Image (cartoon, helix red, strand yellow):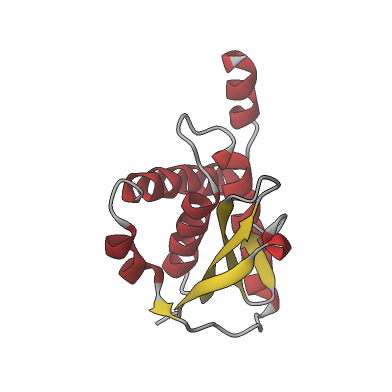
Length: 149
């Protein structure tokens, strides 16, 4: 199994390999953040209650898709839980590094048993980078805008 994974890594082009490595590091960093109280993490997420623009250039769209795919793929291979908030924070940092705007959303809903559940997702321009698969099941309770500067 490990040999199969190593073979897959070996065939990646340099740019993808580096993007996957970056994604892995930011996922690890974001997971470590989860050890802190949310009140300490929230200021790092961006401007509370604000949103960024829905527009992005053609080149930015390509980069957004690459980042989205990298976070999605790499998060499946971390030895820690890389759940929605971890993926959203990691994606946000990758976008910030490239000076691309993003909005991180936090939502809540009730599961089949009536228990409160939460979800986080990330958008940049018109694309959802993480968490889009189930976001429509949740009501937005907070959003954080991180503007490129």
